[in-house]
Image (tube, rainbow, N blue to C red; front, side, top):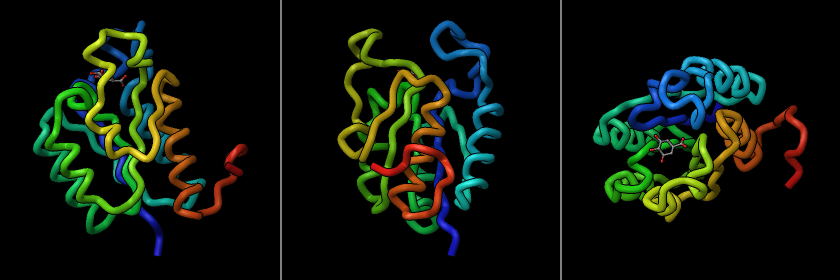
Length: 155
Ligand code: DHK
């Protein structure tokens, strides 16, 4: 059976490419989705790609992943720094979880230095721009044991 990865995006990421491009870059979320879909197709993984500005919706998708997902890649946006509820939902998911931040949150305001999600994440990527999503998906393919033609997956 084909594995499915849920790629979940939190608040304001629908504005990617338009808001603060000096921090988040010029690529849109649609560009990111296309790149993620292409990479997953190459890796032989199914993808569910979502964005919501609502905490409860993100939690509902994490619950859905309990039944149909093999891994989660999540950029929770600002909920990273505030949401015990998203942490609790991720703790109820058994597969690997990878946290992605487009910006290097550790070089920004101190309130962005703490992540509730990191208490659950198996890996965290920050500051690699939107490429961070693709790096996380590369890791997903590796830990799920599906073949990946992308170089550098030996670790
Ligand atoms: C995105 C956001 O919207 C912020 O609230 C986070 C994260 C950082 C990012 O870098 O992708 O603090």
